[in-house]
Length: 168
Image 1 (cartoon, rainbow, N blue to C red):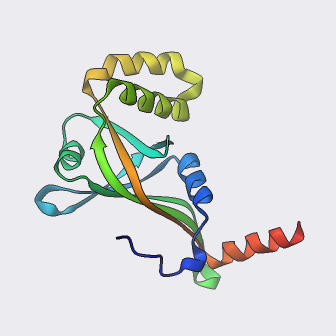
Image 2: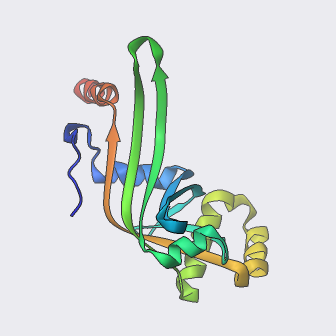
């Protein structure tokens, strides 16, 4: 169903792809938008319980797209250092494919928004909890249930990691 990565030698182990999702703060969520045009938007996320979670308003283009068509992808660029004199870039990225859904259960919704709040504002949780309580009825949590995920890094970074391992 999902293509194998063409440059499979550059594929990151699953654990490293998950680490990128845990540590990164943003990516691009791609949905099927109005009139079947792709709709890709920058989002903050949390990787929690093997899923990606996003938040937003109950109304709008994103909410409509999530409700209209469940298939989606999410791309995170963890590193992108251009090396002009070598005509290349040192990069690490992850692409996750799966199905998006509006989180319906209050328990999962609260768990997801609290995970998001801890990730981005752990030092301000009392205020964060108050904000969540105040906006609860207008808050939409979106889950991306991952069906396939690949991480990839540039050949140069792979070589650097192999040299570091050889020194150990």
